[in-house]
Length: 240
View: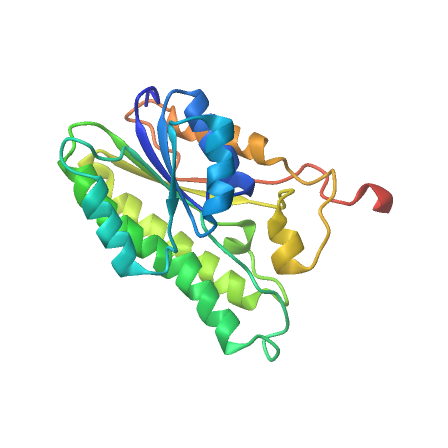
């Protein structure tokens, strides 16, 4: 796909890899609707990236709000070519210590939110003459279970299953579906959700974004449906 003049939607766009995805897409000439709950952060990104970054204050767990926004914003003459389902959160701890609220928030954001927006985008993409691409951001936690992340594992394993079914369902409609499984990235996710400090050996958001751009720019009849990304040496420098 030639990204110049394409329309993209990026959820979780206010920080981390969502902001990096938006930056790389705009550098390629795309227009990006950046969705997140923190409008002030989105506005700061717009000031840095310019008017082709369009801030949208949105909670992806609110299906009615998403539907109203999509119906107001898009049409047959103005429809998205790219959907990046990036918004996600994680609460880590032993299964008997994980609260019901934490479990529900992970399910609502990491699974339901992806479904809510994807189901609204697919009809628009099907009606387009252009090729389209949906990229779901999972995690290595969607490939391998580990203690104290059972809830997060469940959502990311679920996202993998949803994505695999979707790519087989939509491939004949000129819609690609890819899933990225990144390992540790130096973002606020670890500070806020996992209680762990970031360190220089984690992957950089802009490097991960380069891989996303590569997936989008593959030839129309070539699909990379899954890709895992990991730091070569994941240990903290002081532990080496």
